[in-house]
Image (cartoon, rainbow, N blue to C red; front, side, top):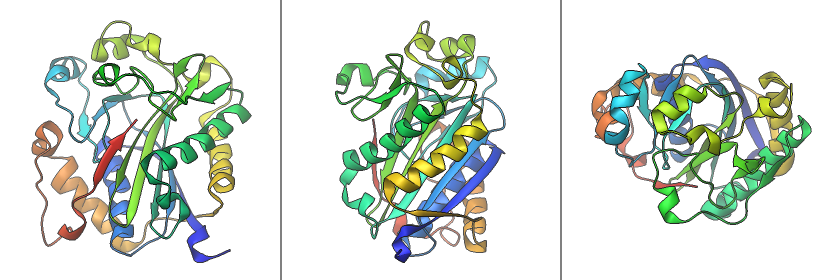
Length: 280
């Protein structure tokens, strides 16, 4: 197997919203700058939190988010809001040397989503890939789970996984939420009455645990993307960048509220700042 076929597997426990987003971005930026290895990362959340897309306005959500006392964090990827509660979150990061990068935005979505479908089916969820996306009007809603786009994962006729992607010149990040449970009152409170009815979750279909899904998903990603996963932790350089990004971006109201960049030039390489943002 070539070096491009050797990926890291990082399995984390429950992290804060700023830490989770900083770690995904740090791995992406390292690969964009020619350092590190492609990676599958699996993680959870310490407490309920809302993430919003890179260009999403927080105005319509601000009041209800505050009412529930939820932290909010702005992703560097596109798409709409996600209430992170009971879920397994995945991130796939690879550089341009891997075939996945050459597939383009939709091709990469489809390849990764198929791995998730395969894993969900193994743990007892009758998941499927949707091949026809919803209208633009539906996708303009605040919630990522309001309606599926092409190549997203459905179960029971409803969306069970919400994903978004960021592509730089030399690397891509796709991360997403695989819903395990549901707080209907909180979901409807944040995204509007009936929002929870558009979503499905793993525990509706099976008694399999998050740990079960972590193991199966890592196997299916390895098989589906043709890579060998080796458990590893971030290097010292990545750890430093995680801390810098958390401090200068994801813990700042300027970024999380309005998307304003507040990055220390001596800590974060500005050459990797611009990238393509997309979500389905």
